[in-house]
Image (tube, rainbow, N blue to C red; front, side, top):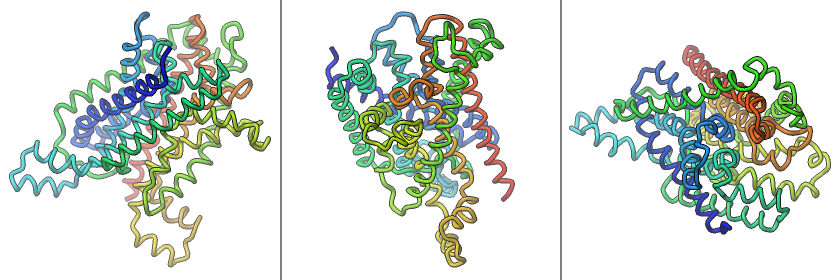
Length: 468
């Protein structure tokens, strides 16, 4: 039997290796992106960002058919780390690309005789390091809490704190053991935050508009091309399986209005998608205003980021225990799921909004205050229009995060309140090409939605530049 210490070590190992590898790959890819033309950079970075916007559970589904039929726990851990890298390397590259050093600094260094290597590691990297470490912290925290991906790619051979919390609470009904494991998981999160703070991590812009100052990276171009091919192959595999499995493409999509082979599901996939859409809207209305307010404070606070490292499974467990003490208007309704989801969606939107709000000129704010712009007027007439793109990015992250959330929903959404990830997981958990074909059709729609959102964000950026 796996001990608590072994579970802690496995979870920490997966999170740290995922963050380190994603950062090592993302740094040269980001420098390569920064050295390309604006249109190329925009297109490539958007495509690389799509896996980051998809839920870990869905990435697990897309990679599942590629796994060998037999493997051990070590192989399972490697698959999980590879999935995390696929998800997050593009995100890390986007952070590096958005935080390039002003060109005049590099020109001055060139005049002083600095080589390309020296400029990269003596001038650029030290100034970028705080933002890179902050983004790496996000990757580590997400990788430590990717419950759905562990379930799909672990094959029952990889045990982490999250999976054991779920087993203890849902199968064994041992809340004491579950809470003990939840405390260990929280301790791991606090350890990551202490490490990040001690090495100088600071939130940085994720989607900057700074002109490219990088000379590019040959290694980054190779790695970026490989990553693009990997993303394309994985997503193409989903679309192909949606077409070929079961009765075929049209039937698979038509079956989404049903409950699967032999009425496997309690509700149809379409009904579950509507539940997820409803939760998405509620989570956005809760999380976005809180993140906006926190991002406007003068001092950055790691307390805002803390919930991102606490597993949705832990949140689900805690709220399941507390549900009997909450008002019936909340505990007995669907509202509990988006409330819990908003707790760990606030940190990511804060990471997007914090640098953006801090970049607004103090003179602009002071002039607006003198003209009587307070509260809503300040937002709607001054800061909102100036920060339209960061707001749209934060909203997109919250929306897709809520839509694909699996851990907390597995505790709190049941019966007719089941969400899209829950019914998709049940479909792939049962044998039969019809059920898997339905799951792949739903996954295809999810990928297309993420692509659409990335395209809208890119369109927003172009519109803003034209307005200038």
